[in-house]
Amino acid sequence: MEIEGTKVFGQFPIDAGGAGDQWGLLLTKDNPLTECTDLALANLATSGELAAITDEWMGQWTEAPTLSKD
Image 1 (cartoon, helix red, strand yellow):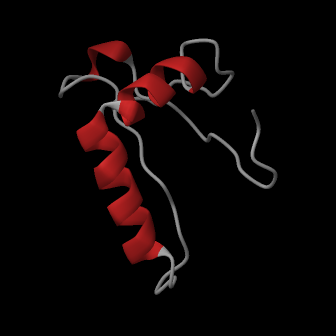
Image 2 (cartoon, one colour; image 1 turned 90 degrees about the vertical axis):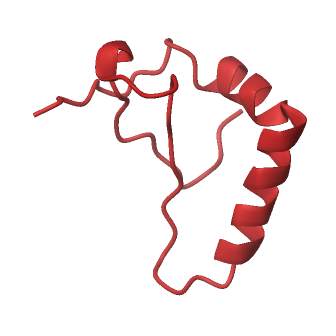
Image 3 (cartoon, helix red, strand yellow; image 1 turned 180 degrees about the vertical axis):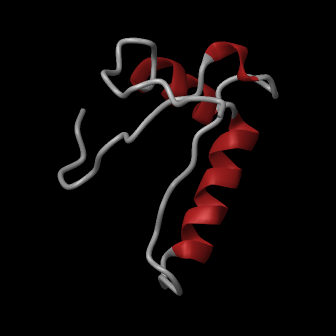
C-alpha cells in the first residue's frame, strides 16, 4: 500500500544500535494532527500492531538509501 504524497527518505543501517528498527513521522510545525498522531502511534505500539505493520511494510525491500552514521 502506498500513501499518496509520502516518501521514505532513508533508513538506518542494521548495526546502528538501539532497540532495533526505528522510524519517525514528519509533520509541519504546529500541525493540529500531532497530538492525534502521537496517541494513535502509542496505541498501535501497545497493542503490538505497530510491530506487525513495520515488519510487513517497512521491510528490507524498501528502495530508500541507507543513511550514513557520520
